[in-house]
Image (cartoon, rainbow, N blue to C red; front, side):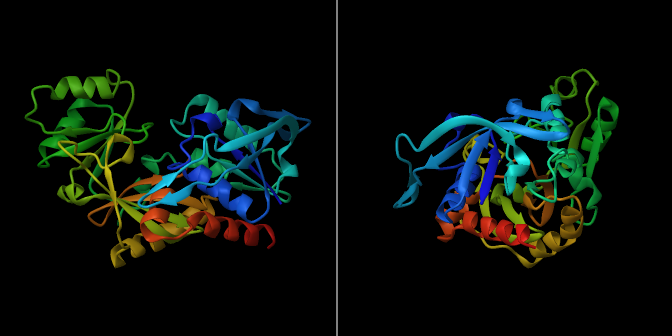
Length: 322
């Protein structure tokens, strides 16, 4: 079988951390072909999506004590070939956020892959539907108290009604731009003005969850089922647990409440073609649904001595053969 991955430039990936690399290694381990491309290399010709693809051979990471060690170089690229994406058995859209206008355009191009020939993960329609902050709002029984607004007064009234709140840009990633808010902060107005770009862009505000100090749990879901989790714990004076801002990862278990949240989300995720998802849970509350390039597999594999990449590819192969 042939698997294509739409990714950021491969030389910028971290083989010891990036989930995309873990999944590509699993494809190779099963004896299938791994091809890579980038968003700007997509084209629609005669109603069919083509891409400039290069086959890649990976030198898999090795576990050394409590971390992954990669070869240098860790990959070898073949010659670039333009070919239709429906010549692939599966296409993984794994471009990192933010979701920009070019990203949205890329999802439109992906609509012209023949679904009878090729499985696209995640669905282009689903990617357009699921803003990683806003998508969670429909799951009212699982989320903390939340508003979305660009109105400074609305935001102030919400924060004043809480002990504290967390502000999130709707297009952010990896914890970027997330702020801890208290209405007594003398910088409050300026923070809102900066975050909303002078009231021109809405932001999300959620009541602050004190359980955040115990960790922000990333749960990986495959076809609506939880398959693994890692806890990300803030360090130092940082209130964010994201790995990109220094959060410490720790082994964890999925609680009964968290399984219930996954079951609650599953029908909608599957209906939207969002098969590979990472949800964030703090203190039993759903805070985000990550669909663009969910990460966490490398950390879960290391802490739990598993191989989630293989589990993902086993499911994809079965799905293709249905």
